[in-house]
Length: 361
Image (cartoon, rainbow, N blue to C red; front, side):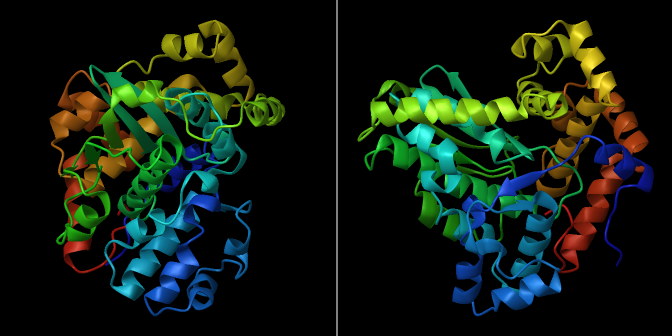
């Protein structure tokens, strides 16, 4: 069976706005987990054309595409369906480098999380973290916005393992989640997830996130260093200044977070970036793209993941992505991929049922 691919024209369009890479830190445990499961990390990475010393330095970067390829091969070779979870549970706030340090020495948990969310793009250019509060509940979420990736379900497993450890590292050992949301189909054996998180887990969720009591957000971070915090803020500001010229990356990051909140419009993104919508459009045009093109790319990435890795209904996906009705979503998806969403889902499901790792898993 041939792997499912986006049409060449769609991939060409996507290449103009996607440069998804991630710092090695959060996935640094890949070689260790492979060895524990009886595999030779160098052999697997060599098979994919990856440098054997790639994981030796946490400041190295790897593309999301290569993470997906590596996770797919690792799951297949080890026979471990929760490989991503094993990787994620071994990384914490220190894996986020200087951004994690800024969070670690922030005054409160809420400030620390917002600092990490605001600056994570310095290390992660393929996903958007977010923090939302509703009543007495808070959700720290992570959304991959690149389409046609392999192993997204396993990447979300890793991300939630890391997120849980980050929260515990900032709040202290007494913190615990109340629920974990996973934007992936329920695995055949959910026990490893239950053992790790030890709270209710909602599979097939519309996003992947850690739910916890909002009251924690106001609590001071134990062991924080106020003087170090000021120094880290200055260092982050310098790094941020180097990235400010990349308006496309900024728009993609902000639009992804707002899209899932139901307000991913040009006006809402421009407001966050403190720009007039016409100014934002002009700057994007200078980079050879447009807001509509970026938003459609984000919608495609999220749609591909939700169709391939969850059992969410088409109307629910359409509503989440901001379409007025399912037929509008169907037409847009077919225009992007050449196939209606139902056919795309059936084909990816057929791939999985044949015992292969789907390119969207």
